[in-house]
Length: 99
Image (cartoon, rainbow, N blue to C red; front, side):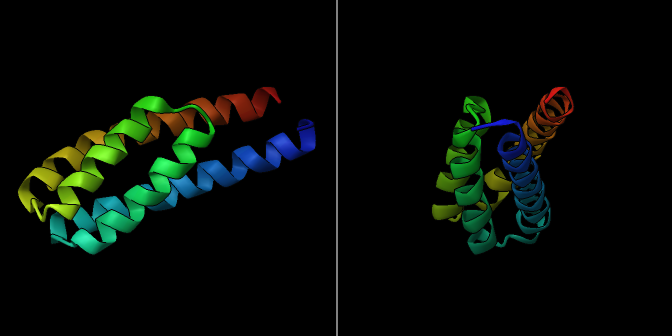
């Protein structure tokens, strides 16, 4: 990919995970299952791109909960997903600095 393109890619992924995480943080307590479905779809795709398999699987699970309209469970699970998203962002920021 090259150093410059890698820096650009990591920056975009960090941004996308952050925005999707923020959406989950707002949507879950509000019972906004449509918002959760959209945000988790982004998380599934972006986390898979960088090999963040745990985040990807957590996003898939939260997406399933949102599709099932299981608001209470989704709110609880979203908190765990947000912690994992933060860890992925920190890892990617470190990688970006090394690049």
